[in-house]
Image 1 (cartoon, rainbow, N blue to C red):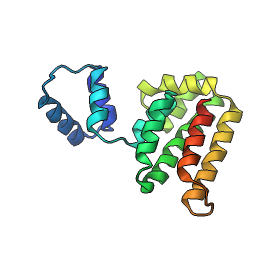
Image 2: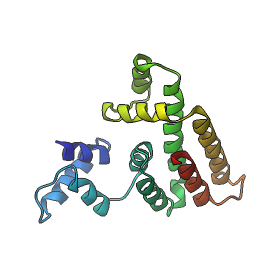
Image 3: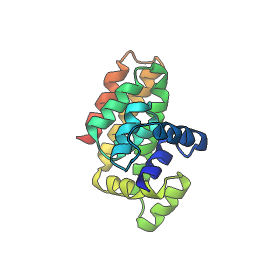
Image 4: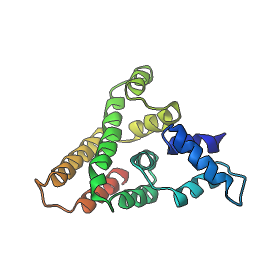
Length: 168
């Protein structure tokens, strides 16, 4: 069941993509996949996306976040999507800090956050200071300036700095 949920998450609910992955898995020698080996298999045989980045980021998995981030940054055209994803997570945390647990459900619904990720966001909002969230959002502004060519800063360094700062 967990392996199926991971496939659904990886394909963002796209049934065609899910079917393609299942067909690909069926062709493999190892026919038994669980939540542990399916994720490793999918990471070896599929490309990363901003949803993978978001998952690693909110789970505070520094190594995985940096691997996905730097893989995505190989194509500079991904920078805007990467920024959108990280800012979305940071803004959501900022919103969650303002509400108690009942009001947080409304925030989750408004932002289309899956129930499986809500506890992670809740925990992260609790342990992350408002100052860290605001400073991280300010770093996002610097990244945005670099993407738009207003600043000549190194985009890869800015993104990596944001991740290191947030997870420190």
